Length: 515
Image 1 (cartoon, rainbow, N blue to C red):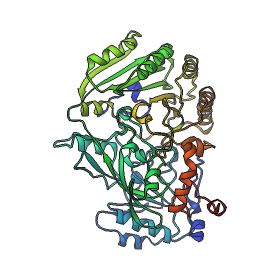
Image 2: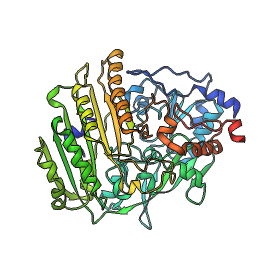
Image 3: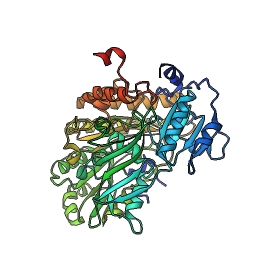
Image 4: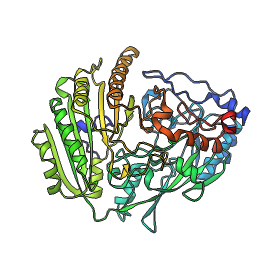
């Protein structure tokens, strides 16, 4: 089973006012930079768990810490926040039970957090109060007109299984490659994947979403009804406006599609030439059939393992893509694979199963191509990476953007970075036993290259689905000029911040709202 960070080097293949005061015990984004996160206060209440349990309908269930499977349900994907334990978990099988749990939490002064896949990098999908899981709502249903209705707890894997399985729909919604990532968080933050250049971000294909709001009302948001809320749900990030319990998407019939998947690994000395070739390939890709990710990685296992990996897909036959890939092949990759496959088999090849990890991530979204001098700095940083303990990795990964994902205007959806050439993920993962001081040094190295890239690429734009709790000007970095509109929508739908976290959108205060 491959982890998120090692997948490229491994070959990438794997099958009210008083209420506001009561809620100030919710999570703080400022986690300690190693294993345990900073302690957060528990609500000073005696919650009536029995009342909640009795109110739930069939199919939903309350889990308390003594339950056998509570630890597994509570565990976040990023183990950096593993010590942040909820007081209880409600596994909800219906929007009505999400509403019940939400209203109970309010009545009992209980901080809360929604969770679908639980893969939030910064631990924002966990809490010291009530964790409201929508995972049981994972149904994927094909509708007339090439549309899919997807439950709020469905993952990328659930959607792929519905499309490709026996009697499958053959309908595809552009999504991510990690099978365990929830469609909810992916969509609400934008949604990168190996087909966004062809068919747009995940959020660009959203037609409607059902949401349980802070006051307990259940609404449907689309272009005609709750239009502002619908706009915010396409890039405004999860956990800000309500709990999304279902999504309706326009989908693509891929029954006749083929795709060619390719994977290469190179030594770090080829990094500058690789980036030059890849950027030229993307610039020349008029049909948006090509998508690529490039990773510069030091896995912390010795200098011989430092590598540059290229993983990609071309929507078409291998003869066409081999001509395009010839400049890369001439660089004599240490590993190479090119396979023409049916569409679903190709997506399976590109997919990955992400184990729990301990990671820290920072991102940038540059609007210019990377010059060779900047790529050389990335290569040099990778070579100089100090793991301090075997297996502590450092990486810079570039996710190609553009194409149809870049077609909308910056204010067409809440996701603003439409002119981005790449999303750059700078990060580190570390192993058990790494000390606080060692982690501090790992983080200092990632801050160094991130700051340097921000300077030379002249941007602080960041991707909200790669949240960085240390980011100071996150409002502008994540949302650009869209943040003001998002605050107004927050004020209308959640003025008392029932949904809150360290980098959650803030409602307008009284003076701002009255101006």
